[in-house]
Length: 159
Length: 174
Figure 1 (cartoon, helix red, strand yellow):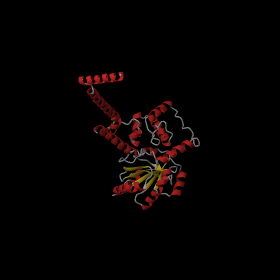
Figure 2 (cartoon, helix red, strand yellow):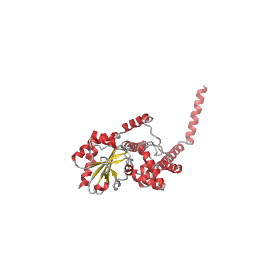
Figure 3 (cartoon, chains in turn brown, blue):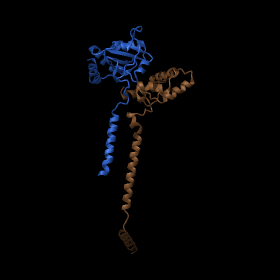
Figure 4 (cartoon, chains in turn red, cyan):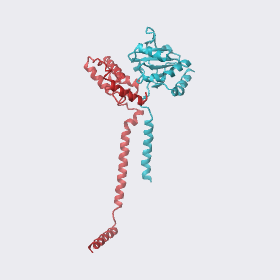
């Protein structure tokens, strides 16, 4: 879908949603299962509305995936197995916290590299500036000259 | 002079990165299933619900698996291209009717034409999940050994068909 169409779709569906509100999804009988499902799905991105987590999204796909997670919890799968199930199908992108590996190295450490570079640049600039300020101090001769000029000025204004 | 060169250089690099980033489609997420065996399934056919279909029935053939639904607006956009492709007989297209109702699906095919060798029904979207479907329509190119070689996310365009899908199909058919 083109972005504009998608936006239109989102707008329309949000306007029309009260009209086609569906029955509430059946609540899981087991509260513990539901809690675990929410914890897991908060870690996952909904690929239909990418800025929403799987836990928050009301997209059909998100509902199907939540059902899938619920069932897998029921089958006694571990959190890691369920996350692997999702990344095996949708890629690392579904995880809000992508695994650390070669291709995600910059993603994880890029900000710190930038920070280090920024601090280094700041230190370099400050050092250069302080050197310039030190060089700008007057020699004894210049000091005398300056004082003489100041005295002259006072004399002039007194007349 | 040197003072301005460095910030300017950094700025240009930044602009280049941002320009590349802005021109990429964030909705196209690379599939981890490329070059992996197409997930197995066994589903009823749309036209004959008593008959079933499994990908292993097509071992030794190159085929396209097109995920579609009657509620999917952009499916209409690509549909004429698929109908034309089916007529050309270059490669068989199998439809995965995704979270749809049978009557809607059949009516849709009657209205817009049926390019599919056959359609299979994934009423609950479970096979869709196995294939990592998230934006219908999606089209998979599956080779003779049953391995997914390419995935088109969103409607198949003339350009994608001519530049990517058909050359790949020809290559795989050799």
